[in-house]
Every structure is written in structure tokens, then in C-alpha cells.
Picture 1 (tube, rainbow, N blue to C red):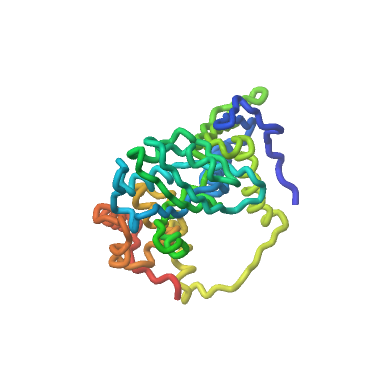
Picture 2 (cartoon, rainbow, N blue to C red; picture 1 turned 120 degrees about the vertical axis):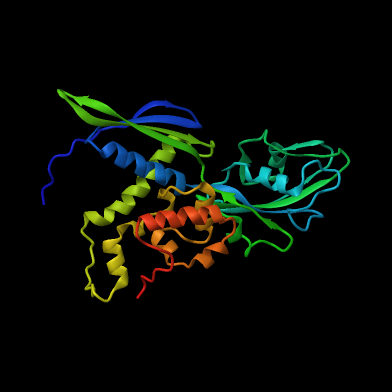
Length: 321
């Protein structure tokens, strides 16, 4: 099978790069390919690259996060939030996790860098991050677990694996802080409607922006390779009796990812923690089921109902039969 000649760039131009951010250009691209590649790379960069984060914390003398520590200015909730911001880079190749025991006494202001001497397989990147302030005579003993993962994992998914007395926290694994792209017109000879993609990547320093872009491209290529060898499967579907086939073909929006819809960030996060990824998965639930989801407020429910009404679909759809 022959494919009509498609214009494509022969190299990636690095406009500027440091250990923390980089700007890359791709040109020339066929019209529309700038948005296609830019959006695909952005989504993979933000969701699929591996990193390291704290998943649980245990503070001596603390039973739960909604309490205070004598002699410490910040309450436990603030300490947990500060620890969640610590960024790690592995020093030992192949390391997956580490349990760290920290004991500090003769200091009034504790920063992330103070934890460094207690680590063996990792280094802390944002050493100046303030963890807490305390009285000089007050001991500060904390144990935390560093684990490898990708994207974001809410605390609820860590609760079943933490030790007794430990506090599970939201794990932000992704090493990517921000990704932006823009598409400009590019001229090839007398033709000016080609695309130029400009991609800006900001990382936490645990991965070089160039390596991040390379890894994201590799992930995309691996997923697209399946089409190259025409590895397709076909099966018969009874269109009249199969609700799932009916809804997928008559309401293709059901396959849309919730992350692509115009929902608040809080709504998207709480739905994701409830393991609802697509709109079809969401509408298969009853309204009462959603009211049990943590942080899913009435305002969000009203907005969702208005959106579903506009699409002529509703909660409680049964597409499994």
C-alpha cells in the first residue's frame, strides 16, 4: 500500500535548554499536524513519565493528620502538605523505593535539605523548601516512604498499603511541572500554510527536558506501532441487541475522557480517584453514587446534569447488556 508523500521535519531544533526547562521546534509539518503532535506529546509528558514521591508519612507521637505537635508551629496537615512538595532524583540506578527515618533536634527551622543526610538512594532537589518551624529543644522524628510511580496517585489509593499509624498522602510522581505548545505558520518555498510546532517543557530537575521529550515520543511510538503491522481483530456484533454498540455509535461522546471536558480541577480529581475515566463510565452510575464521592459537591452535580442534558444522555445508562 502506497502512502501519499507527507512532509515532515528531519530534525528537532533546540531553541534553548537547561536542566529545568527547554524549548523545542519541529518544522515543517503538514497543516494540522502541529496541534495533533503538540497535544499528544503534552498529554503523555504530563501523565506518563515516571518519577518519585513520598506516599506515606509517620510522625512520632502523631496518630492522625488533624492534630498539632507540641513545640511545632505548623500543624500536621501543613507538614504533610510541605512534604508532598519535596522532589527527588535517584542516585542509585534501578532503585524503586526507600524507607527514610529522620531525627532532628537542634534546629528551629527544618528544610527539605535537612533530610538529605538520611537518604541513601536519592537526592533532594528543592532543598530550601521549608517543612516546619519548631522550638530548638523539641525533637522532630519522622519516617516516610519514597516510591516510584507515574502521574498522580491520590491518598485514598495508598491507604491500604501504609503502616499502622502512618498517614497516606497524595503522590505527585510526574517530573513535569508544565508543558505548553503553540503552532505557527511555516514557509516551504512558495507555500506558507505548513505548521511549525514550538514545545516548551518545564521539569523539576529530576529529568532533563530533552530526555523527557524523547521518552514521551517513545511511549507514543510504542502505542502506534500496533497499526503498522495491521494487527486488527474483527468480531460480529448484534447491533439491535447490543446497547454498548448502540451508544458508542450514536453517542460517541461517551468515549470522551473526563479530563478533556470542561469540569473543575477538583471535580476531575475526585472522579479520577473514584476510577471514572470516561464519560461513559460516569453516566453508567446513579446520581446517588456520585453523591458519595468525596469532594463531589452539589454545584458540580448541577453542572454535570446540564452538560448531559445538552448531549441528550443521562445518569444511570445501562450500556453493558
